[in-house]
Length: 164
Image 1 (cartoon, rainbow, N blue to C red):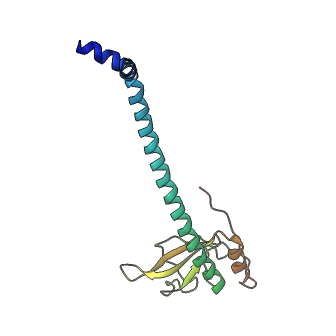
Image 2: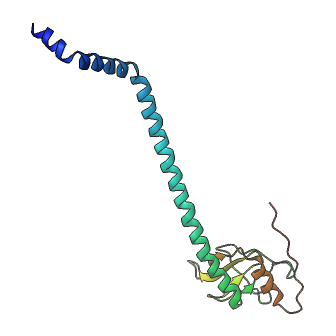
Image 3: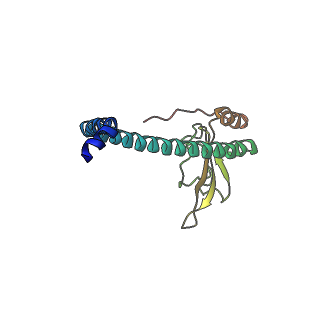
């Protein structure tokens, strides 16, 4: 008697509850697949946002270095030429020594050097006390490098683009 009373009073709730429970049981695989795809999407978004943040940090660092390099060119850095031919420009490489063309001795520490590519550096002492290129900065403003080269009066320098 008690079950009949419960059935009459709550029949619609029992039917809808049974239908919902059945549909949840039948769609449990779809729900778990959707949860996995959401988890993968969340991971991908996190990785992409981290990469974006790193790229933005790199860009701001490059912009700061570009301002340093531009100031060095405007202040009058020393252009580095090739060892074999003073008519050809050399590319600065961090950690390498820069020699005076005439005396073949290292340039003094704290000398600001630059090349035709837009790289600048300051000669710093390495672990042995030898002046090497350090504290490098690059400017994308090629015109600054060209203007610095033009300041060398009467010199005819030829610049060959790097090859690999």
